[in-house]
Image 1: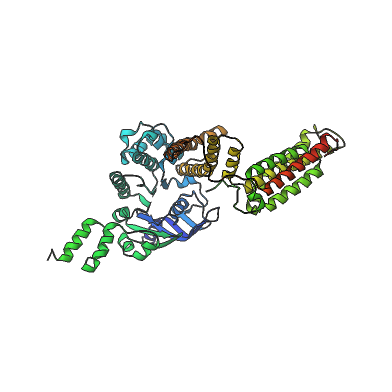
Image 2: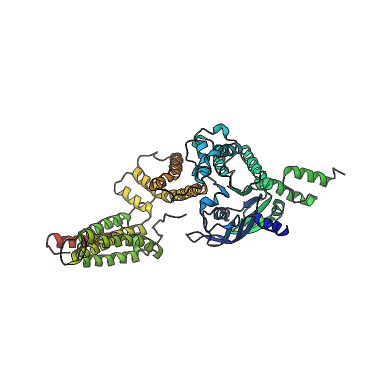
Length: 286
Length: 262
C-alpha cells in the first residue's frame, strides 16, 4: 500500500519544470533557469512585470516554444518529443487576445473546432460543446458569429473553446485585460468554479487584486527567474521582492501595511479581513 | 518574433549619406548595365565592384549572409537547370537519354547565375543602406503622390507587425489541436483558413484604428505639404551620379556603336 501511495504522490505533479532556459531566435534570453512543480488541482498565479518571462514559460508548457535547455514534463512525459496536438489533450491555453483565434461563423462551431481537431468521438461532441458554453454562460449567443460579440463575450468564447477540449490544466493569459469590473468578476468566478471542479488553473496576470482574491499559490517572476513562490499572504508581505519585480500589492494590503504600526497584522488579503483585523486591534471583541 | 527581418542597418557611411534619389537612380542604371553585359568576365568584374559597395555600406555579416543564402539557392537552381533546357551549341559534354548538355549551355547557365547574383546584390546594397522612410521620401520627391508614398511606407511599417500577428494566430490554433502540416494538400490549404480569417479581421481592425489616428492628427488638412526633412543634393552626390552614368554609357557605346563585345 505504501509504495502505491508514493507513486500517487509522484503522479500528483501534473507539471514539472526543471532548470528551464529559453532563448528567442533573436538572442533574447527570456527564461534563465526556471524550476517549478505544479500539482493536480492547484490554482497558481504567475505574476511579474512585462517581459519577466510569464508568457514564454506558459508557451513552453504548451509546447509552442521548445526549451533551449532543461525539461518540461506534462503528466510525467517530456514536452520536448511531443506534438502540440497531443499536449492539447492535457493542457489548454486561453490566449490573451481572443481575436487571434476566432474564425468560425457561429460560436457553436468555434467551440467545436478544438475537440474536432483532437478527434473526440462525434456522439458526445454536442454535449461537450454545450457543457463548455454553459460553463462560460454563452448558451444565449451560441448561434451568433463570434466577431459580433463584445470583448468580454469573445474572451469567454475563446475560453469555452479551450474548455471543450477538456484539458486537465487550464492556462489563462491575462484573462481580464480590457474587461470592466463586473465582467472581470464574473469571469474570475467561472474560473474559480472550474478549479473547484478539479481543473488545475494557471493564471498569468499582473492584477494583484485578482491574485489576492483567487490564487492559492503565487509564483513571482523577474528577468526570467522565479524569485518567490509562496501563498498570497507570504508574497505580499515581501514588499521588497514585489517592488523589484515591478509589482504593487493590492490597495487593501498596502492599507494594512500603513496600519501595521497601529497593531494591524500585515498578512491581510481582503477588505472583509482587514475590517475584522482592525476591530480585533481595537479590542472590539474583548 | 520570427520571420521578418528589416535589411536596413543604421550607419554613417558614404552610402548612408548619399541622397536616396541618387541611390535609386544609380541602382536602376546598374540594373540596366547588368542586363546589358553578356560577358562572364565583365560580369565578375562588376560583381567585385558591387561587393566593394556592400563593404563600403558596412552591412553586418549576419544580414549579408541571410540575403546571400536566398540568392545562392536561386543561383544553384539556374546552374543546374539552364544547361538542361538550353542544349544549343557544341561541343556536347554529355548525353543522358533525351537530355543533351553542351559547353555553351553550361557557360550561359553560369553567366546568368552570376547576373542574378549581381542584380540581387545591387538592390540589397540599396536596402542595406537606405531606411524605408527615405526611399518613400525620394519617390515622393520624384513626383509620386504623397498619399501613395504614405500608403507604401505604412505597408512596409506593418509587415513585421503582421508577421508577428500571424505567428501568434498560428500558435493559438496549434494550442487548439490544429496541425497545419497534416492531411492531403487540399486539407492542408484549408487548414490555413483558421489563420487567414483572424489575420484579415485583425488587419481590418488595425486599418480602421489607424485611419482614425491619422484623421485625429489632421491628416490631409492642407493640400500643400511642407517637409521636416528636405532632401538636398550635395557635391558628393553629383560625383556619384557622374560615375554611375559613365559606368553605364561607356560600355553601352562600346556595345551598340563600336560593336565591341562586352
